[in-house]
Amino acid sequence: MRIGLVVDSACDLPLEYLQQHDVTILPITVRIGEAVLADHRNEQATLEFLHAHVAERGAEAETMPFSVQQIHDLFLERLVIDYDYVFCMTITKSRSPIFDNAQQAGFAILNDYKSARAAAGNTTPFALRVIDTQNLFAAQGITAVEAIRLREAGEGAPKIRTRLEHLALHTHGYMIPRDLYYLRARARKKNDRSVSLLSAALGSALDIKPVLHAYRGETGPAAKIKGFEPAVEKLLQVTIGQVQAGLMTPTVCLSYGGELEEMRMLPGYQDLKRACADNNIELFESVMSLTGMVNVGKGALVVGFAAERVPSFD
Image (tube, rainbow, N blue to C red; front, side, top):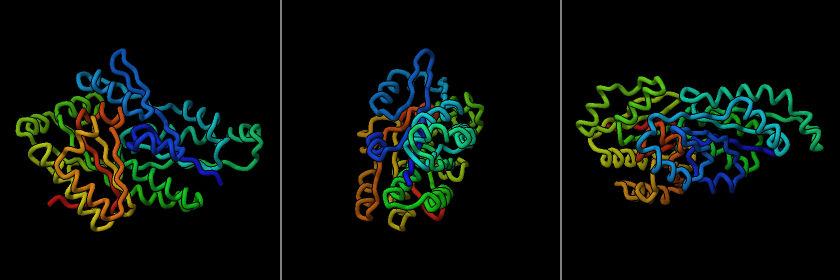
């Protein structure tokens, strides 16, 4: 059985890795004023757009995920021909319509695929499963990497589906924003009341940084720490503890809203890199997606991993 994998462009994994493993990307388009860029996870294009537009006007941006029709057309033009079963792994449905769009497209695809496959000389059935990763950005990468591993190990679609849906329930995404005012302005643009003016003002005045935890489709504060770098160091220490205790998959994903060399100079980064190497954990690093940066601001750090228990910051 030929198994295909699809992610949306908010999934923070290196483009070279996705291309190497034939993972299809559903691009999310970002518009800031007259400037428009479809995010295909090209890091250089993302950084150029960041420096030109996001830092000053990112809070005003509009993000436009693939529509139901665009997803439908992509599958019928290529994926139903190239594969027999496709897993489409999306950003959490609580934060984006991509999951719902893919689900709706899936119903139509399963009604329309037969003629496309027949024209390509294939009369066997086609199946599609949309997986809500229940997480964001770097944490979405955990599910995608595991799907790649399982496919390469020759596992069948039922086992892959069960594993991915279970893994989504135990994936943890942590984010530390640099600019709470930006985060609040962006939240207001999207009618999201998760960052109040008072908390943004107090946090900025006192340099208190929240460590936000995304888990099972919900996002809330896991800790509040004075200073961006001390907050990063604490988060990476917690991540090291999880690595040493044992993760559900041998994977940690990092993404950063800027140049990766800046991220590698943050306190705790080298310790995490050594801990991953010592414990045979693969460490993925990528520039945050354009979608991520316009939503959480320049310079934010995201860490993703899968663990049975919710980590403690005490």
